[in-house]
Image 1 (tube, rainbow, N blue to C red):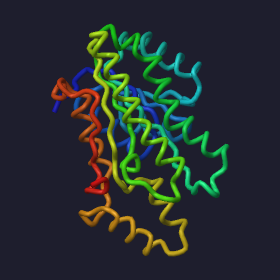
Image 2 (cartoon, helix red, strand yellow):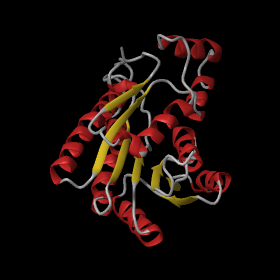
Image 3 (tube, helix red, strand yellow):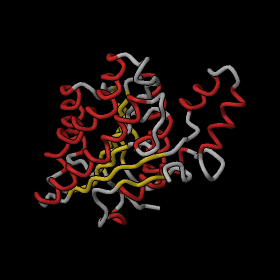
Length: 251
C-alpha cells in the first residue's frame, strides 16, 4: 500500500469502466484523485463511492477552455499535479465505405485531440514538480479491423503522440514521463452493452473472448494495476513506451 501516497492525480473519463477502476486502485494506494467526466451524475456517484480522497469535475475533454478550468482548479485546490491519466475515449464503428466523415472526425476529436489538449494544458503545472502522464490507447492501435477505420487509426496515433511528448519532456528535463497503455478487450460496462446489443449476445461474447490468444477478456483491474505502476516512482525509468495488456491480441 502507499505506492502513490499523496500524489495528486487527474483521471479523465473516470466515472465508470477503466477510468473508475484506475481511480479506485490509485486511491487505495494513497493518491488524491480528481475524476472528470462528461456525465455529471455518474461522475459524482463514483466520487462519492470512492470516498474522501476522490473528487469530481464535469468536463468535456474536447474543449480547450474546459481543460484550462480543470488544471486551474487542480492548482488552486491541491497546488500541484503529479499524474494525468488521459482515459476518456469513444469507439466509432464503421468501415471506410460506411463511416461518416462527421463520425470519423468525432473519433479523432475525443480520442486524440483530448490527449493533445490535456498534455499541453497540464504540462506547465506538472513541470514544476515532475510527474507522469498516462495516455490510454488500445490494442486496436496494432490489430486492425475492416470495420474500425476511425478507431484503429485514432488509437494508433496515440503511441506516436506519446513518444513525441516524452521526447520533448526529456529534452526540457522537466521531470515528466509520458507513456501509453494499450488495453485489449476488457469487460467494461461499455463492452457489456455492445455485446448485449447484438442479435446473439452469447455468440458475440464468445467471439470477443476467443479474439485474445489467452481465450478470455480482461478485467478493468488488469489495466488499473499498470496505471498504478506508471503513476508510481517504480516506473521512473519508463517513458515514451507503449504497454500492451491485451491477452496477446496484438501479437
